[in-house]
Image (cartoon, rainbow, N blue to C red; front, side, top):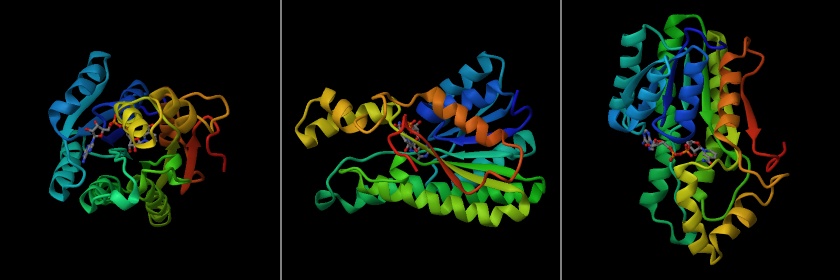
Length: 260
Ligand code: NAD
């Protein structure tokens, strides 16, 4: 058990990558707060964890809502008395060329990724600094924190910006023993990606199979999707890492799509 008795809060953990990390952390002995838009969207993940003998609570938290974020972090600390690990994972996608992109869609995507990451970070750091025994912050970036693809400008811009927030937290958090790192996955088959395949096929005028082969997996070394297990293993590794040596880094897990 690499995370025994640690308390972890994961945003957007009702499904997809966040849920996989929540279940992985629980298997490693952590107590897990599954935060999502509502307790209903978090309930299935909580049931899966508690059903397997782990400890978890559902937290309703729209990460773009300052009051909801502060209340959600307070709820976790009221329940378990502390917070050790934050995974800022909640995210959305929007597919459109820049010249036709509505300002409202730009703001929505940037707000969930970047405002959301800032708000949960601030609330978590206040707790971690007060506890005085360090902590760990993990951001869910993407290969799109490193490079661009067409039709995803707000997502690419926000994911690049998370690298800056991650490094800022690493610099400021060091004095308090708080580490901060960015996970950068390639494409993982989740509802977020499944929704994009027909959207991109329409925008690019190609088939869905061609989107997968020629757009999503073209630059990988083996034409394979990254898996939930791959990302979860990295998230456990970063959370359980025993010293401040590993901080301010972005770690790419993408079947070689991006090599740094
Ligand atoms: P997903 O759509 O399957 O899950 C996202 C979760 O976030 C959902 O449970 C949703 O309810 C929640 N959410 C959305 N808006 C929210 C908000 N405002 N407040 C709180 N929760 C909110 O997506 P996923 O593929 O699991 O993606 C999770 C993260 O991983 C995102 O940050 C995404 O950008 C990133 N990522 C995904 C991939 C991929 O290929 N799937 C690749 C790289 C990075």
